[in-house]
Length: 213
Ligand code: FES
Ligand code: FES
Image (cartoon, rainbow, N blue to C red; front, side):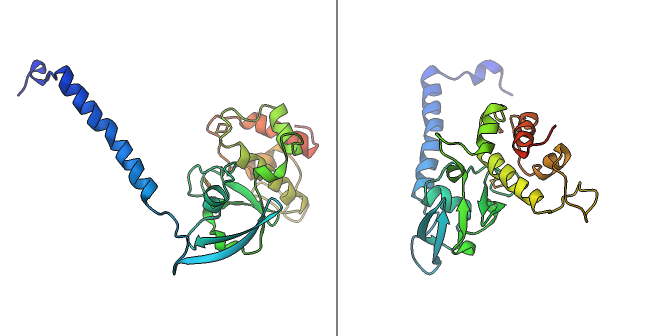
């Protein structure tokens, strides 16, 4: 068995090894960049028309393209985030025809003619949506990665309560759901915040909902 001294690596040898290791991600990145993720045309492609934030877009997409990828990669609306890409974090939440959905879990071609609202369409820097303004006021974020999804989800969630849609914590399914922090926390449980800004997020939602915490 070798002693620790026998494992000694010369400085030149170490630099060579480091350079070789450093080149691995570069080669990997080039390979990924060259690999087509979505065919622009061909037997697997399809045309879809989406009305996104008030503008109509006609896209030719590989039919396997998720709505999230169409928004980010084709329309360059990168406000919508890709966290898990598996429907588990809520970072990709957008509104489609007035309902909040995880855009990573649905194919773009399933939404022909749909009205899509992303965080870019909710408000503008000069005129924030009330939910955006409340998140700023209550410090409802730290790194901000989950925030677009949280805000879109919160807007959709309040609409769902207004429409009388119950949740798992609604005690009386026959009555109109109440706008309580218990309801907010349950209905926002699909939006994960790694920074743990939950209490401030609930404060922001509570203010927009016009109720006392
Ligand atoms: Fe869609 Fe996480 S990226 S739920
Ligand atoms: Fe960082 Fe939510 S603010 S993940």
